[in-house]
Length: 117
Image 1 (cartoon, one colour):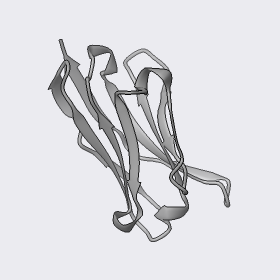
Image 2 (cartoon, helix red, strand yellow; image 1 turned 90 degrees about the vertical axis):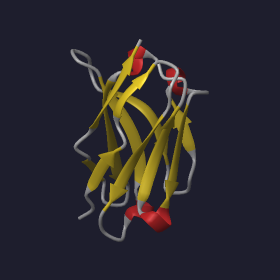
Image 3 (cartoon, helix red, strand yellow; image 1 turned 30 degrees about the horizontal axis):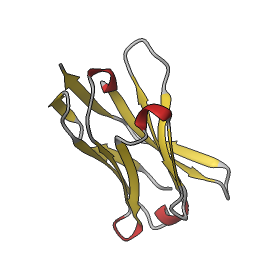
Image 4 (spheres, one colour; image 1 turned 30 degrees about the vertical axis):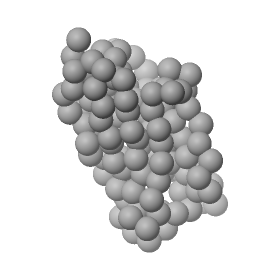
């Protein structure tokens, strides 16, 4: 069973950058589609970006042009590069791995991102 662990969150000023990592245990990471989600206080969890097992990407409108999702299967890790951060990007960021073969998914524990104005 793959487990996911996020890291890279922290406090950054508006306009700054952070790179989040989603590290997977096990040896089947490459078959998982990875999604980054975020949840701000009092709000529902929302999708930020996805990357398929083949490397195809998609983004929420607010993330286009500022965020980049990528993966390195050799390192069993997915990334979310976030640039030009805004205070409204403040949230807990989660990665989710989806195994379409088994119709199952797993969540990481989340990492806090705080953007100060």
